Each structure stands twice: as C-alpha cells, then as structure tokens.
Length: 169
Image (cartoon, rainbow, N blue to C red; front, side, top):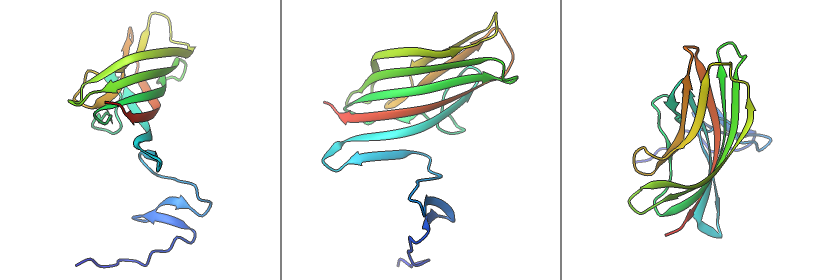
C-alpha cells in the first residue's frame, strides 16, 4: 500500500530527496537531462545533455561512459559544443558540430550530414587534438570521439549537446 511521506507543497519550489529541482523563481536546477515535448507533436522531443571525457575517449553522460540514446525510427538534429583544455590551461580546442543523424528500426545510427566549426584552436605545437561524431557504438547510441596525440598531458573534454528527435520512418 502506498504511503504519503510528505504533503506536496510547491510554495518556495519543488525538490527531490531534498535537492531543489524547481526553485521559487521557477528556475529548473540540478537535473541530469532536460527533455522538452510539444503536446501538439508527441512524436518529437528536445533533450539537452552534458558529456565529459579525458584524453582519448568516447564522451559519456556519466562516469561509466554512457552515451546519448536516440529513439528508433527517428531523425535527429544534434548540435554539440565541445571544448578540450590541457592541465596547464594554456591549450584549448573549441568546436561546434551540427549533425543530422538517423536511427532506423533496428537502432542502427548513421550520421547523414555534419558541419564542424572550429571556434578556437590554440593547441600546443607538435600536439594533435581531434573531435568527431561517433555513431559506431551500441544500438541507438550517439556521442563524440575525442583524441589527443603528441603529449602525455591530461586533456579534459566537456560537451553540451542539444538533440531534437522526430519520428521519421
């Protein structure tokens, strides 16, 4: 039998396990992923993610390397802003990748098109850092592959990713 642990009260905001999720100014805070839906078009969603990685890696949504999940039978417009910074803070690579990605009924992900804009590239000489879309993982998964070469310096990578998925097939 269900029990009511606390009376629901949204005065001053809303929390989950004593962590504020919506504050008294109606700001959403402390959420891992934010998904927006249009009630008129229930076959589409917009979701925002934060991905991270170190050195050469597939960027992940958490410490175990989970990737963005794309629904089957969709086409997605994916925009990623990615930055890599070395441990001294003196080397940076910042890029924006705009992609159109399909995911078929079996979960096969394919990048149909992409546009990469290098925002800033101050990578130290003799080093090579790269960022590419990654669709070669498990079914329904998408991310970015980052590499560093020519150094043993630690490179931290962070990405903010906006995914708009629409039922396609």
